[in-house]
Length: 198
Image (cartoon, rainbow, N blue to C red; front, side, top):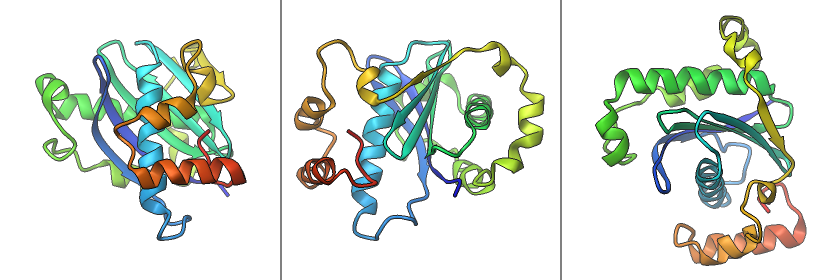
């Protein structure tokens, strides 16, 4: 079944600054949702930090596909879906919500804003509307520049990391993940469950 799990807007300065995000985690148990959301945010931030401006990537990670685009102005979008969600639709949708974000939110807020301070509440609408990629057919027809843009496909998040870096080490050192999430990551990795990001 085609499924969209998350869409996020970041500003890429030294780190990836999360500006706005929304999630659909109904397919996970109630008790897993917080941890899964935390890992999706962590993975999204990592991908934004490791993607160069004017570059698109699609990264396979277990049952997920993480699509990321960093514009030349360092505004970045991430969409996390399952493997069945069409790559072209994902990148077209990222372009659409980043264009709308940049039209509504002044640049100075990108650099200083927080997720709670930025008034951009259309992401849940996009997440609901584009659960069915057929809804985006007209959108993809209008978006011709994606044909000319090379999207780099990586097999794992590890392929995006710098030489010698390991996701396990990043999880252990991360201040953005709770002790519970770190324990969940280790357990998920051992059991190779659907929620494993590493």
